[in-house]
Image 1 (cartoon, one colour):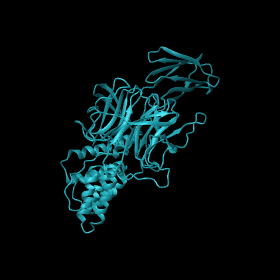
Image 2 (tube, rainbow, N blue to C red):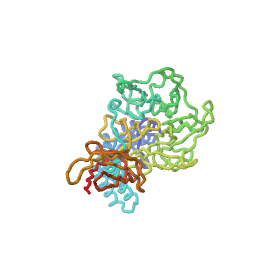
Image 3 (cartoon, one colour):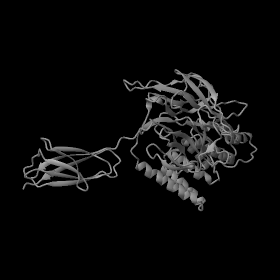
Image 4 (cartoon, rainbow, N blue to C red):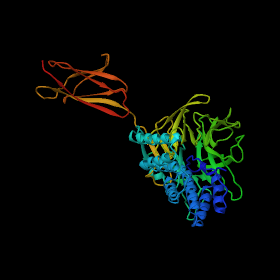
Length: 518
């Protein structure tokens, strides 16, 4: 039964059919893998590997399955090692090359990813997905070479050597930031036997308005954190009710992840309750809650259930009043949900839904998308592009209301830990023109030149005269064409043309104008 997906980042893989093996550790590993108890799967596979020194076939099989586990855990570098082990032991399933190419892609070894696909194509020439995947890698390379205007920088203070993910704001002035982390504040931390990671908790930090400096992160106080895993969370608009994920672990009972609520009393979280959502089977885990501004719609993620589309799907539940219970889950439909994993929903204040997916033609791992609703189950989907997206997993985005600024999570190379929180901002695109007017023959800067800024039809918008140094400056609107005229007796009038159409970065046009004498 799926649990750790709601705490860790995942990648959708085709799990090969499990066969019956005589080796007990391999069988136990297969069972744990199927239940997505990845740490237990790795432990059993490793035991089987160590006990199969004389069987190259078994070692090849175990190595391949261990690689698939590490892909599920979004650790492509470890997956590559085990894929290679499987090749060294002559693993005879051609799909290995296909899976290996995905690991190389997420690890940003693009040439090796293409080589792995070419090797696969030699063995399986009729699979049309091969060329599609090669095209996807070229698409990734093109996207990396042509990033959009978002500026992305790792938020160094908040990150640790462990998992840090899914930030969200605590106040409307954005001076408090919450996030989930598997960092430890004790000398002997507990390990989740399913994931192999430290248990996760909700942390918080505050920004000093005078110095703009952030405090050191601390565990949130109260009852929200437990001996189990607390995952992605969402605050209501009044910032006094927390919707959060909790995954309870029990050695004897396979418990599912559920969504809980907690109420804020000053800086202390209390009254923790499981949120009742009807129609959720006991063996299905749910998580990644995101509450709408009016608290009448809750978005969340579950295994593809009740006629879903495959992998993880995004659902919503609604209610008429905040005092009422939520109704039955509704799948958001095929515009958003794919046969892969679609997860980490975030409903923004402008009612645009953001989510992460390794479907929708992602450039590698999970990418972040935004979805504008067109109808009851109809959405216009758009990728956030590079540099917010990368070949690795990118997810868990949050905005400062309607500003194009906020934070997100990524497992890209160059980070501090296993997953890290990054800051992003989209600089405002502005345009202006500055210049100097010269006398052509005496090579002197001309003051008091009348400069007229006009639209492309010649209608004057603004005018001014050059200063004592012959200088002028105008602010320009975007997506316009301007005609600028220069006149001064006894010089011959001159004009220039400037276009701001298609600009996507702050731009200053610099011009020198030379006036002929009469």
